[in-house]
Length: 142
Image 1 (tube, helix red, strand yellow):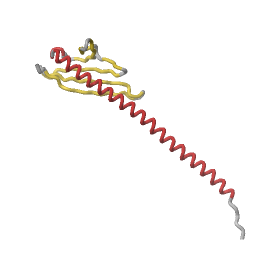
Image 2: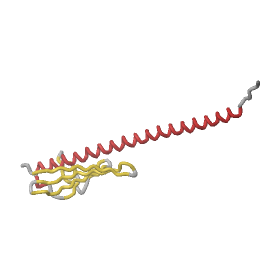
Image 3: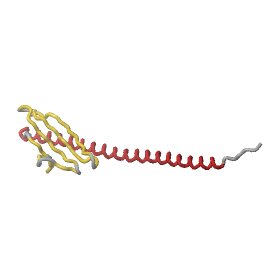
Image 4: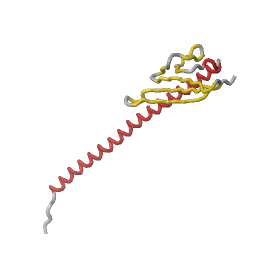
């Protein structure tokens, strides 16, 4: 009894295995590269949001300092902030720090109460802008 060799089928099967292995490798590499790129972008976006939150909080604290000088300094409107000789002051319509634009809005609620909104906007990615908005009330406590 003689056995026939299937050399032709084995060669074809080896090429098919190589193509499937290459395709699987390409898919795995693509997934890992995508995960790394997405992770880096997420880290950058989170860092930007953290910085914007800090600037918005700083804006609220600066207006509190201005209020502590005199509640009459809080006039309704939109402002930017500046600092000179360790004193905060309202400056223009907004202020910009490293690509982050901060705007302070003051609105009268009652004679001794103001609504303060600190808004910071920035360009997160070329396709998307970011924004952080913090609000609080300030009162005439003196």
